[in-house]
Image (cartoon, rainbow, N blue to C red):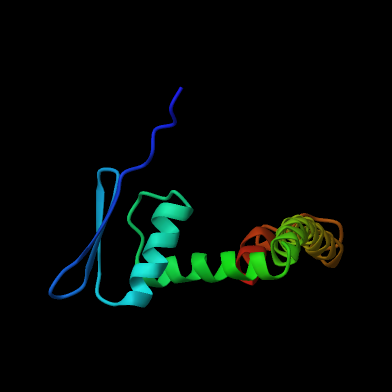
Length: 125
């Protein structure tokens, strides 16, 4: 069984370069953009439109990943996990702070629930 090859067509035009990958066509105005576009659309197999700045970030990230054997990608995953853990901790801490403020208000009112404590807490946040 023969493997179907992706149809890739590159043309030099008067004002730049045209890259066709399958049914999608892209236009680039200098060699640097063309190389980035080729990497993104052909090597990464991403067909969707993306602005040139975002494409450059993906290409730079891929080059960095390749250069350090994936250590940057591993670190990014670790940081993402840490970020989620910290978000959870912040939410828990905010809930504890709210309960403590309510308790302080309760005690300051001589054991009576304050009618304004909810409003005051909303203003602090």
